[in-house]
Image (tube, rainbow, N blue to C red; front, side, top):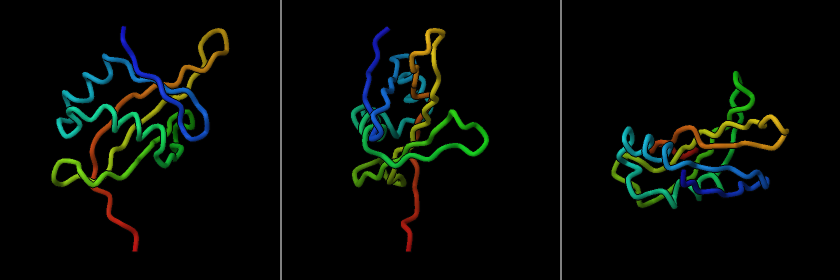
Length: 103
């Protein structure tokens, strides 16, 4: 199964499978043709750990050229280890969001 792999700002290897990408764009048409931006969100975006599920992180990054009503891409990444102790970090979902500027 095809997949795309990137490293985040902390050096963590994270991948998106073709199946996950199809799932994302079926439900969030604002991300159609935005796979490179999703990958850049994981590479360069701000990361915040989920308070209830510490293995889950939310990445977000601002974009000025998203579909009207959106100014960020948000991606959820789950961090796991496989049976051999090797990291298995992957994008679960992503969506466009409007996040109000601070100030």
